[in-house]
Image (cartoon, rainbow, N blue to C red; front, side, top):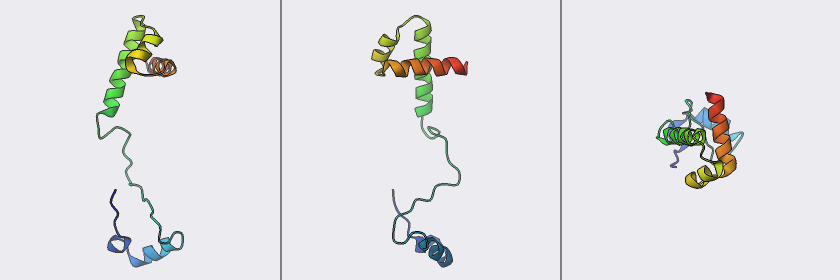
Length: 89
């Protein structure tokens, strides 16, 4: 992450107001428009597809033990995925 000097982008009055709360420290100012998790990559798509596969295999009788080994997840995670997908249907 790169830093921008406040003096280069903010009016002096605003800098002085901020200095009343924090002075000489780094401060993070969040974006106005927060993007949804996974919206800029294929991560969300990957996990949705993986979870659908897990549920399909579970419906076909594959045990949670086998699914956990196949997807490198805990049995508890497999059960959570199956429950959440069932609730979404």
